[in-house]
Image (cartoon, rainbow, N blue to C red; front, side):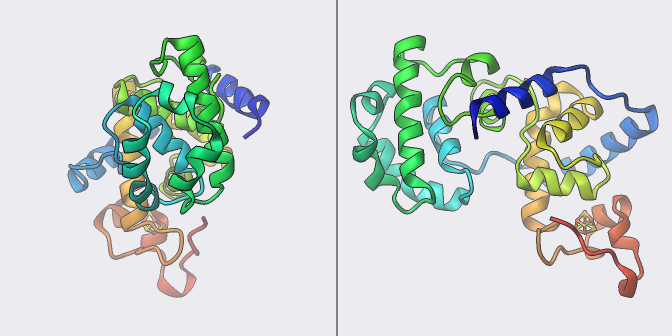
Length: 242
Ligand code: SF4
């Protein structure tokens, strides 16, 4: 994503949060409690051992599955152990390790450039602020939120990926389709300490029940309680979007 678009989104997300009513917040907390009870092991499904590996796995996961990324990264991380290792190589040397993943040439360039910046500007350590993370090539707000929330336990924002967008929309947590606006709605509805977990919960529900195609509407207790789709008469049931 071009840096200017990413910066605009970051600015929007940092702006004053939209107002939510007590009833909206109460409903959001009920949904959160139901999802926490359903998915007590919700977690980041990318494999990583340190912040750098998570950063790189997240860059690789754009328009790719976590499972596909997890297949490629063991060999990649065995060959390149530090940001300096990546920076001292070249995109061409990184490419063979990630060739099974879509857009691998661009991703190899992004990983190489991001690691060069980490070495030059941040002493070889992945930075711990949104502002600094957004200076790295291949890192937009979603990736930065993944790294901050999971590697550093810093709830700066909410990860909004395709699953979070779809499920938040269907559960009535947002009316927006723009990721920046969805993130601001979720930040306004849920307590900060839950932001990282919330994304995992919505992703787990999106992968297992509220799928993009053939969502399991009406077969699920959370859906029956919180989503109009589950309770719509079958012939007129709204087709889930996403
Ligand atoms: S009822 Fe269907 S659309 Fe609504 S949250 Fe459940 S699976 Fe998704």
